[in-house]
Amino acid sequence: MDKGTRKLRLLSVEPMMAEAVEPGDDNNEELLGLEEDNRCPTPLKRSTRFDSRAMLRQIKRIMKIFGVDLDAAGNKLKCVISDNTSCNRRLAAQLSVPFVNCFAHLWALAMSSLTKEGGIFFDYTMAKVIDEARRVQKVFKNSSKASSCLKEQTNLVVMLPVVTRWSSNLICVRRYHKIFNHIRTAFQHPDCPPLSPPMDTSPVFQEELKDKLETLLSLNEMTMYLQKSGLGLSEAMLLFDIALNQDEASGFSGIGVDPSYLDLSNSVFSNAHFLSGVSKLQRNKSHELTTREKEEVKNLRTPSPVRVAVEAVESERNLLTALKKRKAEEPETYIDCDFILATAVDVERLWSLAKNLLTDKRRRMTTVMIQVILFLKENRNLWNDNMVYQSIYNCQQNATNRRRREKEEQFIEQQSMIQAIAEAIEIPHDNL
Image (tube, rainbow, N blue to C red):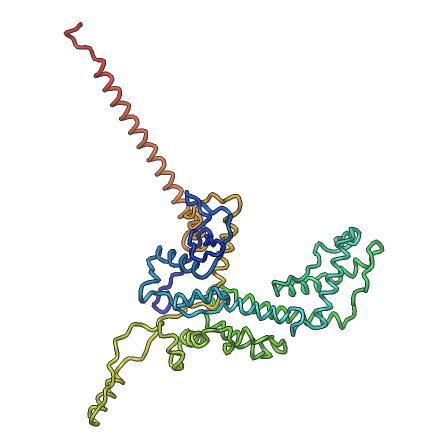
């Protein structure tokens, strides 16, 4: 309950279905993969394609389960929040609703361009750390004696960065900084092969490594905050503004964050006025909305009576009357926009739960069972242990009552059969 408005978030996961597309045939709408008993799908044997049309049909079908018809006029769908892909943009356009970029995804793209090789943050120190980590790992991997020397010091090993995840740079630097002294001690052992060229053990390099780690931790702190569940759009926009301005107190001073994915004026934001308008509504500053922002957020207005148009007046009396009527009208009001989030991390977490649930050994689970288990996992606050015990007791009682009724029915049927047999074999007294 928030400001008198009750918001319920509905999440639905079903077995993945793809639209099978034959070569040269874009109109084939056959759904493959589902078995006749509505179990989980088998691997698709033909070429498949997931496009905006298939997603739209699936969303419409799911929303009808909850009583929402997206084809009807005045539907309750306000926006689409997703990663910045062309397929998701086309989906929002087909639904005729604004597209809201996932701010966590945009931040990941900005950090990838910042920390990748050739980026602003990938300086001499970063390149040197990664190069040393690779050479050290190669020595410990190819030599069992070197590996045993390191295990005598610590059970931790060197981690290398992954191209697809910028946070792996942080993992690499943090791990290397943590076991740096252990690695140096291991290489001093006579049984350990030497490292060529040797490690840089100078205090200057240690200080540079420490500064680089602190900067990466500041960036990762921003990443973890954006992955918080229920993060509002206005709060995420304020965080992006802090990162762009590079305030000294924020920890982003001198980092040089790429504004291509953070500034609303760039083309990556297709509905910048809608985003800024929603941000002002969430901060209760509807009076600061510009004309363009009012036009973009008009679908968020509360139902209001139709305004009486001010017609041409012929005298000062009529003008004053029209002016009084216009002043008496209530200002524009908007619905509670806190349900518009800045990220799609809740859905991503739900997909992760579904992936852990739908393993290779659980392919025979029904769709209903998957949805029920995910619902219970996602809404842990709606049930407790006593409710579980009571449900188990009720199931056991229902099973006991069912077995008792079956036995009673079976007993009655046997009695009826015995009586019918006795009547059939009864010998009349006249024939004795």
